[in-house]
Length: 93
Image (cartoon, rainbow, N blue to C red; front, side, top):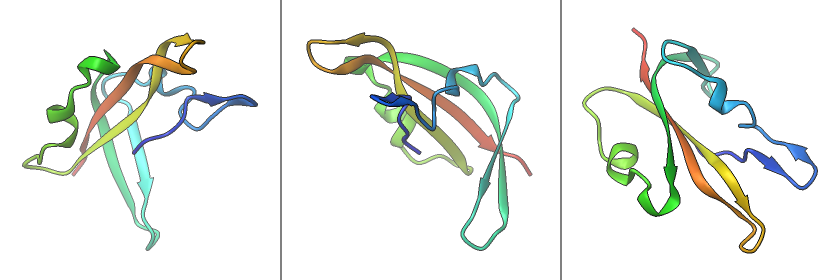
């Protein structure tokens, strides 16, 4: 799931994403109203040139969740943050 950290008007959906720590629970409400529960396994900040593509997008043996937003210093020249924050979470049974 990708989400903005902020915008020109203020904080966005993932503004506090970096506050999640190992063991925190994330709940995802599905279209049918059921809830999938995930536990944060780890998180990391990555330079955009070193984004962990395989860790984020390759298939996993069990259901997982990845939350991704911008992080780090804001580069006013390019209008973008220099890093990405990725939260890795596993489905709770």
